[in-house]
Length: 298
Ligand SMILES: C[S@@+](CC[C@H](N)C(=O)[O-])C[C@H]1O[C@@H](n2cnc3c(N)ncnc32)[C@H](O)[C@@H]1O
Image (cartoon, rainbow, N blue to C red; front, side):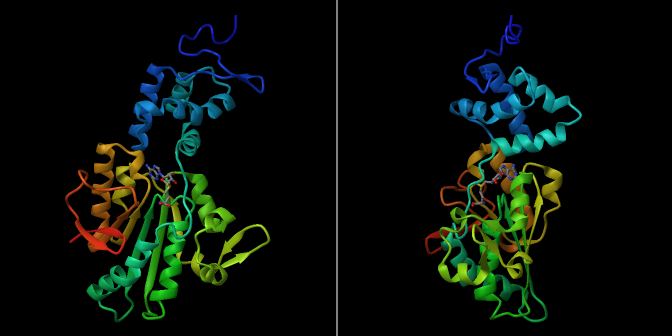
Protein backbone atom coordinates (compact mmCIF):
# COMPACT_ATOMS: atom_id res chain seq x y z
CA UNK A 1 0.00 0.00 0.00
CA UNK A 2 1.39 3.40 -0.81
CA UNK A 3 0.76 6.77 0.81
CA UNK A 4 -1.84 7.80 -1.77
CA UNK A 5 -4.22 4.91 -1.34
CA UNK A 6 -5.83 6.38 1.78
CA UNK A 7 -6.57 9.67 0.13
CA UNK A 8 -9.27 9.68 -2.53
CA UNK A 9 -8.33 13.20 -3.63
CA UNK A 10 -4.75 12.29 -4.40
CA UNK A 11 -3.44 9.97 -7.02
CA UNK A 12 0.19 9.60 -8.02
CA UNK A 13 0.72 10.62 -11.61
CA UNK A 14 4.16 11.56 -12.87
CA UNK A 15 7.25 10.36 -11.12
CA UNK A 16 9.88 13.05 -11.05
CA UNK A 17 13.09 12.91 -9.07
CA UNK A 18 11.65 10.03 -7.04
CA UNK A 19 8.79 12.26 -5.70
CA UNK A 20 5.33 11.11 -6.73
CA UNK A 21 3.20 14.03 -7.88
CA UNK A 22 -0.37 14.46 -6.75
CA UNK A 23 -3.31 15.74 -8.74
CA UNK A 24 -5.58 18.64 -7.90
CA UNK A 25 -9.11 17.26 -7.89
CA UNK A 26 -12.07 19.39 -8.98
CA UNK A 27 -13.32 19.57 -5.35
CA UNK A 28 -9.91 20.63 -4.09
CA UNK A 29 -9.60 23.20 -6.90
CA UNK A 30 -12.87 24.80 -5.72
CA UNK A 31 -11.55 25.08 -2.16
CA UNK A 32 -8.24 26.47 -3.34
CA UNK A 33 -9.88 28.98 -5.62
CA UNK A 34 -12.01 30.36 -2.74
CA UNK A 35 -9.06 30.46 -0.38
CA UNK A 36 -6.86 32.37 -2.83
CA UNK A 37 -9.67 34.70 -3.83
CA UNK A 38 -10.51 35.55 -0.22
CA UNK A 39 -6.83 36.15 0.56
CA UNK A 40 -5.80 38.34 -2.34
CA UNK A 41 -8.59 38.79 -4.91
CA UNK A 42 -6.88 36.68 -7.58
CA UNK A 43 -9.48 34.47 -9.26
CA UNK A 44 -8.55 31.27 -11.05
CA UNK A 45 -11.06 30.60 -13.83
CA UNK A 46 -12.17 26.99 -14.46
CA UNK A 47 -9.70 26.65 -17.33
CA UNK A 48 -6.80 27.59 -15.03
CA UNK A 49 -7.03 24.45 -12.86
CA UNK A 50 -3.91 22.89 -14.38
CA UNK A 51 -2.02 26.14 -14.06
CA UNK A 52 -2.85 26.32 -10.35
CA UNK A 53 -1.92 22.68 -9.94
CA UNK A 54 1.49 23.16 -11.50
CA UNK A 55 2.13 26.34 -9.49
CA UNK A 56 1.33 24.69 -6.15
CA UNK A 57 2.99 21.37 -6.89
CA UNK A 58 6.47 22.54 -5.91
CA UNK A 59 5.38 23.55 -2.41
CA UNK A 60 3.39 20.36 -1.87
CA UNK A 61 6.46 18.34 -2.84
CA UNK A 62 8.84 20.51 -0.83
CA UNK A 63 6.74 20.25 2.32
CA UNK A 64 6.39 16.49 1.86
CA UNK A 65 2.58 16.71 1.86
CA UNK A 66 0.35 14.03 0.40
CA UNK A 67 -2.34 16.15 -1.20
CA UNK A 68 -3.39 19.66 -2.13
CA UNK A 69 -6.04 19.48 0.60
CA UNK A 70 -3.29 18.83 3.11
CA UNK A 71 -1.43 21.88 1.84
CA UNK A 72 -4.56 23.97 2.30
CA UNK A 73 -4.93 22.73 5.88
CA UNK A 74 -1.29 23.61 6.45
CA UNK A 75 -1.89 27.17 5.20
CA UNK A 76 -4.95 27.59 7.40
CA UNK A 77 -3.75 26.04 10.65
CA UNK A 78 0.01 25.50 10.78
CA UNK A 79 1.96 27.88 13.06
CA UNK A 80 4.27 28.60 10.09
CA UNK A 81 1.35 29.66 7.90
CA UNK A 82 2.35 33.34 7.64
CA UNK A 83 5.68 32.47 6.09
CA UNK A 84 4.02 29.87 3.88
CA UNK A 85 1.53 32.48 2.62
CA UNK A 86 4.54 34.34 1.24
CA UNK A 87 5.58 31.28 -0.74
CA UNK A 88 2.02 30.81 -1.90
CA UNK A 89 1.85 34.35 -3.26
CA UNK A 90 5.19 33.90 -4.96
CA UNK A 91 3.92 30.69 -6.53
CA UNK A 92 0.65 32.08 -7.89
CA UNK A 93 1.62 35.57 -9.07
CA UNK A 94 3.00 36.59 -12.45
CA UNK A 95 5.66 39.25 -12.03
CA UNK A 96 6.40 40.15 -15.65
CA UNK A 97 7.47 43.79 -16.00
CA UNK A 98 10.21 45.88 -17.62
CA UNK A 99 11.52 49.43 -17.75
CA UNK A 100 9.57 51.87 -19.93
CA UNK A 101 6.81 49.32 -20.42
CA UNK A 102 4.24 52.05 -21.00
CA UNK A 103 5.91 55.02 -22.68
CA UNK A 104 2.60 56.78 -23.59
CA UNK A 105 1.72 56.94 -19.86
CA UNK A 106 5.12 58.41 -19.04
CA UNK A 107 4.66 60.94 -21.85
CA UNK A 108 1.24 61.89 -20.46
CA UNK A 109 2.74 62.32 -17.01
CA UNK A 110 5.43 64.68 -18.22
CA UNK A 111 3.40 66.66 -20.74
CA UNK A 112 0.14 67.06 -18.84
CA UNK A 113 -0.49 65.23 -15.59
CA UNK A 114 2.38 66.50 -13.43
CA UNK A 115 2.17 70.11 -14.75
CA UNK A 116 -1.60 70.07 -14.09
CA UNK A 117 -1.11 68.78 -10.54
CA UNK A 118 1.64 71.29 -9.87
CA UNK A 119 -0.53 74.13 -11.18
CA UNK A 120 -3.28 73.09 -8.81
CA UNK A 121 -0.87 72.90 -5.88
CA UNK A 122 1.07 76.06 -6.75
CA UNK A 123 4.70 75.71 -7.88
CA UNK A 124 6.14 77.91 -5.19
CA UNK A 125 7.52 76.91 -1.84
CA UNK A 126 8.32 73.19 -1.95
CA UNK A 127 5.63 71.43 -3.99
CA UNK A 128 5.30 67.72 -3.38
CA UNK A 129 4.05 64.96 -5.64
CA UNK A 130 3.22 61.48 -4.34
CA UNK A 131 3.20 58.58 -6.76
CA UNK A 132 2.27 54.97 -6.04
CA UNK A 133 3.10 52.00 -8.17
CA UNK A 134 0.58 49.52 -6.78
CA UNK A 135 1.58 45.98 -7.81
CA UNK A 136 5.05 47.23 -8.65
CA UNK A 137 6.59 43.79 -9.07
CA UNK A 138 10.40 44.23 -9.22
CA UNK A 139 10.20 48.03 -9.41
CA UNK A 140 10.74 48.90 -13.07
CA UNK A 141 7.53 50.99 -13.35
CA UNK A 142 8.42 53.04 -10.25
CA UNK A 143 12.03 53.58 -11.33
CA UNK A 144 11.05 54.48 -14.92
CA UNK A 145 8.82 57.19 -13.45
CA UNK A 146 11.63 58.45 -11.22
CA UNK A 147 13.91 58.65 -14.27
CA UNK A 148 11.53 60.72 -16.42
CA UNK A 149 10.70 63.02 -13.53
CA UNK A 150 14.42 63.59 -12.82
CA UNK A 151 15.20 64.18 -16.44
CA UNK A 152 12.20 66.15 -17.66
CA UNK A 153 10.41 67.74 -14.69
CA UNK A 154 13.02 68.39 -12.02
CA UNK A 155 15.14 70.77 -14.17
CA UNK A 156 12.02 72.97 -14.59
CA UNK A 157 10.88 72.72 -10.95
CA UNK A 158 14.08 72.17 -8.93
CA UNK A 159 12.31 72.50 -5.58
CA UNK A 160 9.93 69.67 -6.42
CA UNK A 161 9.77 66.99 -3.75
CA UNK A 162 8.88 63.65 -5.29
CA UNK A 163 7.89 60.60 -3.29
CA UNK A 164 7.43 57.33 -5.17
CA UNK A 165 6.25 54.19 -3.41
CA UNK A 166 6.13 50.72 -4.95
CA UNK A 167 4.10 47.97 -3.31
CA UNK A 168 3.47 44.33 -4.10
CA UNK A 169 2.08 41.23 -2.44
CA UNK A 170 5.23 39.23 -3.15
CA UNK A 171 8.11 39.66 -0.71
CA UNK A 172 10.58 38.24 -3.26
CA UNK A 173 9.87 40.93 -5.87
CA UNK A 174 9.98 43.67 -3.23
CA UNK A 175 13.48 42.53 -2.20
CA UNK A 176 14.62 42.62 -5.84
CA UNK A 177 13.06 46.06 -6.31
CA UNK A 178 14.93 47.43 -3.31
CA UNK A 179 18.26 46.22 -4.71
CA UNK A 180 17.65 47.93 -8.06
CA UNK A 181 19.84 45.52 -10.03
CA UNK A 182 18.47 44.21 -13.31
CA UNK A 183 19.26 41.74 -16.05
CA UNK A 184 19.25 42.54 -19.76
CA UNK A 185 15.63 41.37 -20.04
CA UNK A 186 14.34 44.18 -17.79
CA UNK A 187 16.16 46.99 -19.55
CA UNK A 188 15.42 45.83 -23.11
CA UNK A 189 13.04 48.74 -23.77
CA UNK A 190 15.10 51.43 -22.05
CA UNK A 191 16.19 54.34 -24.25
CA UNK A 192 20.02 54.13 -24.59
CA UNK A 193 20.44 57.66 -23.28
CA UNK A 194 18.71 56.77 -20.01
CA UNK A 195 20.55 53.47 -19.78
CA UNK A 196 23.87 55.26 -20.00
CA UNK A 197 22.92 58.05 -17.65
CA UNK A 198 20.98 56.26 -14.92
CA UNK A 199 22.44 52.73 -14.78
CA UNK A 200 25.83 51.23 -14.09
CA UNK A 201 26.70 47.99 -15.89
CA UNK A 202 28.68 45.72 -13.59
CA UNK A 203 29.66 43.14 -16.18
CA UNK A 204 26.55 41.01 -15.83
CA UNK A 205 23.72 43.29 -14.65
CA UNK A 206 22.54 46.88 -14.66
CA UNK A 207 22.44 48.74 -11.36
CA UNK A 208 20.20 51.76 -11.04
CA UNK A 209 21.93 54.96 -9.86
CA UNK A 210 21.50 55.86 -6.21
CA UNK A 211 20.01 59.25 -7.21
CA UNK A 212 17.06 57.36 -8.72
CA UNK A 213 16.97 54.58 -6.14
CA UNK A 214 16.70 57.14 -3.34
CA UNK A 215 13.54 58.61 -4.87
CA UNK A 216 11.68 55.31 -4.51
CA UNK A 217 10.77 53.10 -1.56
CA UNK A 218 9.14 49.68 -1.60
CA UNK A 219 6.96 47.77 0.79
CA UNK A 220 4.76 44.73 0.99
CA UNK A 221 1.05 45.40 0.47
CA UNK A 222 -1.85 43.21 -0.50
CA UNK A 223 -4.30 45.23 -2.63
CA UNK A 224 -7.08 43.09 -1.20
CA UNK A 225 -6.31 43.99 2.40
CA UNK A 226 -8.78 46.68 3.52
CA UNK A 227 -6.74 47.88 6.45
CA UNK A 228 -3.49 48.16 4.48
CA UNK A 229 -5.28 49.92 1.62
CA UNK A 230 -6.95 52.45 3.90
CA UNK A 231 -3.49 53.49 5.09
CA UNK A 232 -2.48 54.51 1.54
CA UNK A 233 -3.69 58.09 1.28
CA UNK A 234 -3.08 61.38 -0.53
CA UNK A 235 -1.53 60.13 -3.76
CA UNK A 236 -1.42 62.32 -6.86
CA UNK A 237 -0.74 59.51 -9.31
CA UNK A 238 -1.38 55.79 -8.97
CA UNK A 239 -0.37 53.05 -11.36
CA UNK A 240 -2.23 49.80 -11.00
CA UNK A 241 -1.15 48.11 -14.20
CA UNK A 242 -1.37 44.53 -15.35
CA UNK A 243 -2.77 43.16 -12.12
CA UNK A 244 -6.55 43.71 -12.38
CA UNK A 245 -6.57 41.10 -15.16
CA UNK A 246 -6.02 38.43 -12.49
CA UNK A 247 -9.04 39.54 -10.44
CA UNK A 248 -12.74 38.95 -11.02
CA UNK A 249 -15.33 41.72 -11.27
CA UNK A 250 -16.01 41.91 -7.53
CA UNK A 251 -12.36 42.04 -6.52
CA UNK A 252 -11.69 44.64 -9.25
CA UNK A 253 -14.54 46.79 -7.91
CA UNK A 254 -13.25 46.56 -4.36
CA UNK A 255 -9.61 47.34 -5.25
CA UNK A 256 -10.48 50.20 -7.61
CA UNK A 257 -12.72 51.79 -4.96
CA UNK A 258 -9.76 51.73 -2.55
CA UNK A 259 -7.49 53.27 -5.20
CA UNK A 260 -10.05 56.01 -5.77
CA UNK A 261 -10.06 56.76 -2.05
CA UNK A 262 -6.24 56.82 -2.02
CA UNK A 263 -6.10 59.57 -4.64
CA UNK A 264 -6.21 63.28 -3.94
CA UNK A 265 -8.78 65.29 -5.90
CA UNK A 266 -7.22 66.08 -9.30
CA UNK A 267 -5.12 62.89 -9.11
CA UNK A 268 -4.90 60.20 -11.80
CA UNK A 269 -5.08 56.41 -11.91
CA UNK A 270 -3.32 54.58 -14.76
CA UNK A 271 -3.97 50.92 -15.58
CA UNK A 272 -2.49 48.50 -18.13
CA UNK A 273 -2.83 48.60 -21.95
CA UNK A 274 -5.24 45.68 -22.03
CA UNK A 275 -7.27 46.70 -18.98
CA UNK A 276 -10.37 48.86 -18.60
CA UNK A 277 -12.51 50.22 -15.78
CA UNK A 278 -15.60 49.84 -17.95
CA UNK A 279 -18.19 48.13 -15.73
CA UNK A 280 -15.86 48.44 -12.73
CA UNK A 281 -16.12 52.10 -11.69
CA UNK A 282 -17.95 55.21 -12.82
CA UNK A 283 -16.25 57.41 -10.23
CA UNK A 284 -13.44 58.65 -12.48
CA UNK A 285 -13.39 61.02 -15.41
CA UNK A 286 -11.77 59.32 -18.39
CA UNK A 287 -9.09 61.58 -19.86
CA UNK A 288 -7.55 60.85 -23.28
CA UNK A 289 -3.88 61.36 -24.03
CA UNK A 290 -1.96 60.34 -27.15
CA UNK A 291 -2.04 56.51 -27.24
CA UNK A 292 -3.29 56.14 -23.66
CA UNK A 293 -5.99 57.13 -21.21
CA UNK A 294 -5.95 58.14 -17.56
CA UNK A 295 -8.67 58.00 -14.91
CA UNK A 296 -8.97 61.30 -13.09
CA UNK A 297 -10.52 61.87 -9.67
CA UNK A 298 -12.32 65.19 -9.92
C1 LIG B 1 2.36 41.45 -14.13
S1 LIG B 1 2.98 42.28 -12.69
C2 LIG B 1 2.76 43.97 -13.13
C3 LIG B 1 3.93 44.83 -12.78
C4 LIG B 1 3.82 46.29 -13.22
N1 LIG B 1 2.68 46.94 -12.63
C5 LIG B 1 3.75 46.41 -14.72
O1 LIG B 1 2.67 46.71 -15.25
O2 LIG B 1 4.75 46.18 -15.39
C6 LIG B 1 1.64 41.98 -11.56
C7 LIG B 1 2.07 42.12 -10.09
O3 LIG B 1 0.89 42.17 -9.29
C8 LIG B 1 1.20 41.58 -8.04
N2 LIG B 1 -0.06 41.24 -7.36
C9 LIG B 1 -0.96 40.28 -7.68
N3 LIG B 1 -1.98 40.28 -6.80
C10 LIG B 1 -1.72 41.26 -5.91
C11 LIG B 1 -2.40 41.74 -4.76
N4 LIG B 1 -3.55 41.22 -4.35
N5 LIG B 1 -1.84 42.76 -4.08
C12 LIG B 1 -0.67 43.31 -4.48
N6 LIG B 1 0.01 42.89 -5.56
C13 LIG B 1 -0.51 41.87 -6.27
C14 LIG B 1 2.06 40.39 -8.42
O4 LIG B 1 2.82 39.92 -7.34
C15 LIG B 1 2.90 40.96 -9.58
O5 LIG B 1 4.15 41.38 -9.14
